[in-house]
Amino acid sequence: MTTITASRPRSDSRWPDRLAPLAAGWLGLWGVLALLGTLTGAGYPFGANDTHGGEVSLLRLVPVELATPLFAGVLLSAAVAALAMSRPAVRPPGPLRALLAGYGWAVAFVLTVVVPDVRVLLMLGYLPILIVGAPFGWPPVDYSDLFNWALFARFAALAGGLLLAGAVLAWQRRTAAACVGCGRGDTDREWTTPAAASRWGRWAVGIAAAIPLTYALTRFAWAAGIPLGISREFLTEMQETGLVWAGFGLGAFATVGAILTLGLVQRWGERFPRWMVGLAGRRVPVKLAVVPATLVAVAVTAASFGLLSNPEFWRLTGGLSLTGAPMLLWPFWGIALGAAAYAYHLRRRGTCRRCGRG
Image 1 (tube, rainbow, N blue to C red):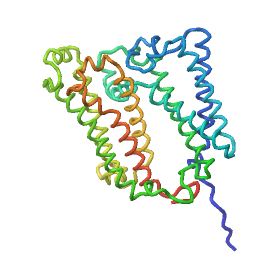
Image 2: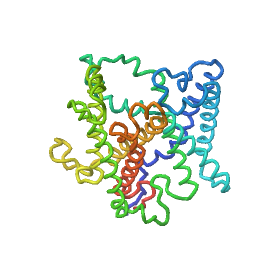
Image 3: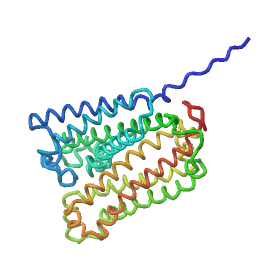
Image 4: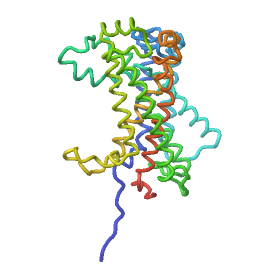
């Protein structure tokens, strides 16, 4: 007689259940630190207290005296909301559910898009250069000025916002009787099918790949000594200070990102190509493509908010010029890249390990 036992769900299918407690703990910790900053008057790293380029952040518009207690209150209340979302699935009344979800998404938006600014994106772009060049003393920068409290706080806010967004999404699925892991219900929405995602995903990939290439083109031109969109005097100044090579590094980062973006609709984005010894022919893990693409999409969107709202940006770039035009497209880049990553996820997610749908 053969006994058939139901297989237990794999551990990686339980991760949505851990998001709310993790978000509550992370936000609660930073809420307490912000509260201490309110009581002591020290430690708040944004706005006027940010001496390392705070003018590119939207938080410069909020006075420190108001922002510090407000930040503490938002973080602590969001931690309580995340804790409430970790309770067993009980669908609350409609208005309460909408209020809790709306507040959660609003705080997640602020932490992932408003608090981080262009420095998070720049750090992601410069990091390979900094790691490779550090043993050789290049670029000639003070690393203590780069890796400071203000930058760390921005990455902490980004992590908290992503955790909270995941917790809200999982809670909404749970209280709507959908699968917490994949979001599928009894009926699939047409635009989420693999065939539909393949169609609109190609448009998103095309946009998300083209925009960073326009940015890279200007930086490569400057490195080659061509003053594309800038004066010859400004180019000479950048060459003397080495900024032209920093721009070249960012252009290279943008180009690599554009090529990897194309992989979201190419065969080599689903199976490792032949030249990758040891991995050739193996399936590319979905998260290996989706997680970095989503992180860059969020960082690009966050960078565009603070940068484009800064009057100094418009003065230095001349607004609608070859210098500033590529960055004016950053909001569309972030949205398109996020959509492309989601389409890739929809095409390749397969059968859900948690609910068996698909």
